[in-house]
Length: 558
Image (cartoon, rainbow, N blue to C red; front, side, top):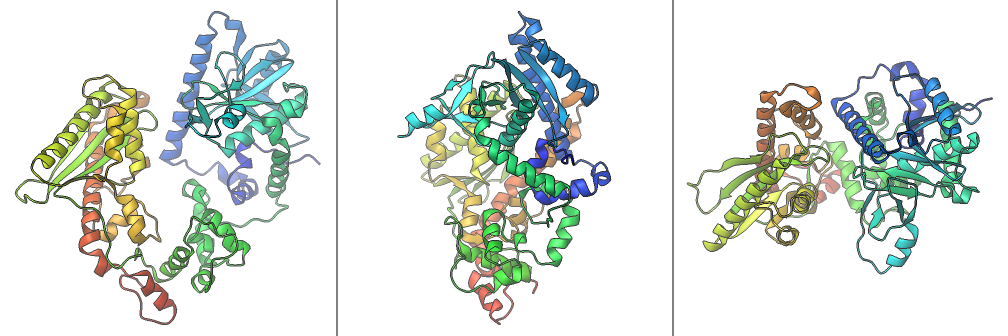
């Protein structure tokens, strides 16, 4: 009997989603896509089109070497044209569709097939980074021998001492899937499985990262077999909360089921949840009443007591729990809250600031944005970033000259630091742009404070550590109920007229209000941490005492 045909998407992520997709295929097509999913698809489509045009330009002197399969036709016709191009010996085939492998249950397409030897190398084009600059290490020789890239213009893999991999399991499984399909068609490039290769072109589109697909085939075959049995309903699955749930259309069905059985994954996710379930701790109640050491296999970088407290907090509907008697966060005479807005990987268009001079109450606390409304990517981003940096450093210097202490705050410095450093690198030499060394010195100082890290040190956050989860506990609320990172992407697209949309000036106002609310939320939260949290938020020992028969913790709804 033929196996259930799967695409690479079915091989990674939630097994229960696969079961539901194949059990209720009619419903899958009825689920509306969220704006965030639509935007990511649009961005991926635009990126692939840019890579296609880049490759076509590289081969413009020999246009017959670069064959493009028309995507505006059925899969069967695309597959026929792909096989014909292979038979004709095309050097590169864009938008290659492989015939469905009925016997083994496989469907798949590659953005690119590159001729090599007597076969083809599958190459996928993805809208995320697949490599990063290498850091000097004592094991450089090993890394150089194992990490390989190929130039875009030809399949010529070689050790790359300047980059290192950013592993992505979905990419690896997709390439193994395509390699297996090429093997069945007799089109795989390589004398034996051990020599089989695939490639990935990422967001930077500066090379092809080489994958040893032959070495992955055994693992892939086992995953394929299990997923096919799940799709055929031969292996039972049940929901478990994971990161994928946030964007899964089945979450509305799974979440009530998880709540009804008080599933432990609601308060512990990822590897910790796996360890708990393997040790027989499957419900929130079991975890809350667990005594003794952490279960065998508990990850060393996770505090087990936090998991127990999270379970009790879920039972008592407690939003935040203190780790310490008196929460601490660095404060200063002159304080600046900062929040950056970016658009995907294209750049940072807005740096919002809020300055507070604690020593001078008469000085107005004023929101000040530094921005560009030229659609990203744009050189005008350099101008707005330079103005922001100049203003921030001027306020810092003025504070120092007046004998005042200074601190700048952000919520989760990973994002801000990325664009601070990235802007210094991309616009080096432009007027007002700091050097990378200047940026590194500032963000490495005590005057750059990450409130996200401070929240983690002072509190256990049962409902998440995001600003929009924590700041409301401190009494802050956003003006726009739809405010959020995904929504802001849609607002920005309309604000600057992307994708042939008319420019909507109301969305610019909306973005500025959203950014201002974010910096004000950061200010309210950090001030509340030192001024009110000690009396308004229960300590973890209060929750443990409640579990053991004590009074309900302060701030809970038990």
